[in-house]
Image 1 (spheres, rainbow, N blue to C red):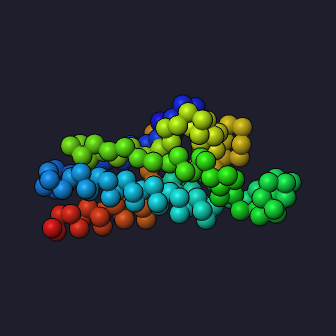
Image 2: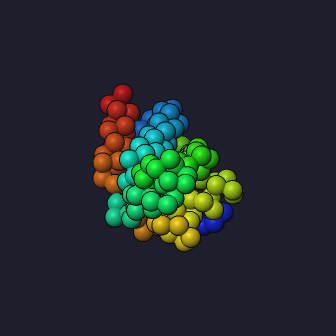
Length: 150
């Protein structure tokens, strides 16, 4: 859901029913941490973590000079507020991890970046019809596999 009040997506961990119930809470929290960190890693490199996502990776000369001491890398980290608000919520019973920005003040910024509304599009939250990049999905599968082997 990408709105001006909240930008988030729900990730469903596959085969959660195969994980013992006493381990599910740890699993969803580990996946949540992994998803947030993966998104931040991609954004830090001025890349979209969204499969097929658009991301204008450079800043205009004027903006870079006036706001970032000439640094043209568009890593969405002008003062850190928006990316620091990126977090997750979990539901261990269903294996769902909701990742996003739930703070009203920061969600509007996130909306504008993800939709390209008033800013160049730099998508870091998947829209309802999109997925995260395959590399991130493979990471979740590795985490899941570790829990299935225990």
